[in-house]
Structures are given as C-alpha cells and as structure tokens.
Length: 69
Image (cartoon, rainbow, N blue to C red; front, top):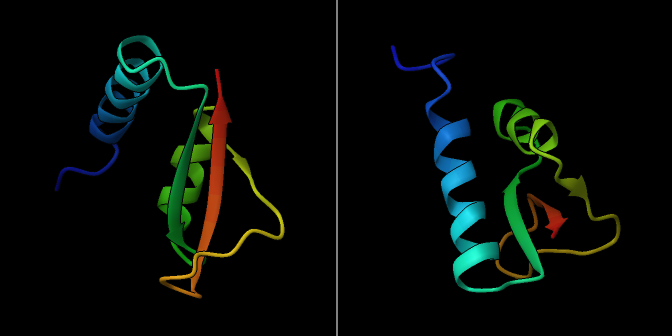
C-alpha cells in the first residue's frame, strides 16, 4: 500500500542529515537481513556500501552497510 512512494528514502535522508549535520557523525552503519532486497536497494541507492567481513553479533542473518560523510 505504501511501497514505491519514496517514504523510506525521505526518512533515510532525514536520519542521515540529522546524524551528519546535527550530531556531527563521520560514519553511519545500517544493519539489515541478508535477504531483505528492498532494504539493500534503499541503502545502496543512498550511497551506503556493504561492509565485507563485519558481523552483527546480535543477529547472524544481518549484513552491515555503512556510509561516510
């Protein structure tokens, strides 16, 4: 119903702006299930890159993406 309306892209941009501009972060990480294609596409379309070799200790099924300012 709400898919393909750009809502998550808009929300992600707000989070990134807050993290980088307000909190002055230099890197932000995102954790998602390895099979969640929608999340992986959202992250890669917004300049996140997959972090090879890093594991989520809390969930072995997650993969990690990151973005630097």
